[in-house]
Length: 76
Image (tube, rainbow, N blue to C red; front, top):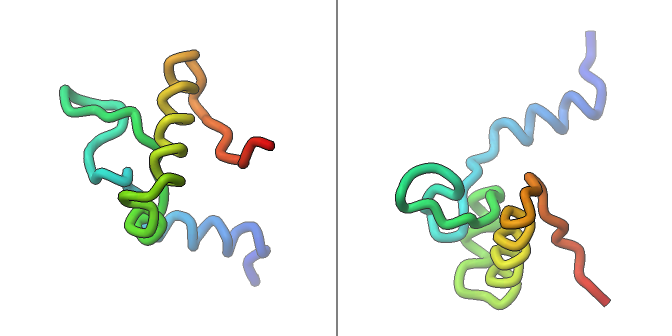
């Protein structure tokens, strides 16, 4: 039986190496940064960029409000 497109997408998503931009844990332990998790390739691209800084700022603000998810869409 062939997989549905959504199942193929989920398989790909599960195989990606996810991390924070700094490489430190986001929510657990004394070194927790509160940063957003993203695929490793994207984290490498965003390291040291203004967009990376903004993403982490939005994630920390959402976490402080008790939210699990943060919105990363550009505000107008």
